[in-house]
Image 1 (cartoon, rainbow, N blue to C red):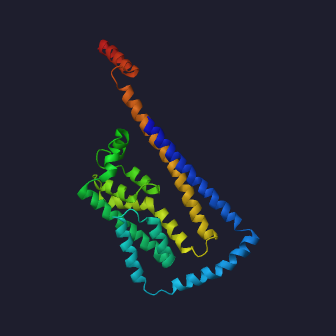
Image 2 (cartoon, rainbow, N blue to C red):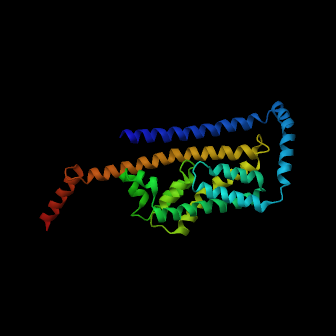
Length: 266
């Protein structure tokens, strides 16, 4: 009960904090429209434009793409490298339409590595953690095949580690194509937002830069609060079902009484 309360409190506070950040960046966007602030910002915009022009002069796109894929590969081994950082970097050094495709392919490559890692070596620490909670394990594993709805939800929420979830589902009996399509479907909106933010990093007070950040924080916060509510519903449902099925419970006694009456009628 104590652990459940701690989990509920932590996730709820984290969700509210993300929504708060969305409000802060919204205020910053409004603040940037003030004439005095806009005039001050224009003095810095020239230097940022020069930096953007230098980056745009890079001709060896193929070399940059290889480096980015190496970063995604390293991310599959070392969790300290973050996907947002890689996607932002891609958006900075490559044109937007190219960066989205490269990031999508890179994330698919990363998820593929960890999926087959899980198939070969098991679910790892994530599997050991969920084994401690019977209700969540039953709902998540779904007879060992892996719950696709939970996978989609995990990919929607930024707080869930991509490596751990990928390895966990690799250890389950779920098809690779189904796994990858669901994963990319849930992750794609974050990937696009990261890339757009990176592409507009040279204009940090613009709506093109701030609006994706606002959307990211707002959706993430709402998702965390919603997930917390869903997990609570699952646990309550399981507890209610277990209680009602016990021999000494009121529902069990009513069922027995009905059984006796029906037996007497026959």
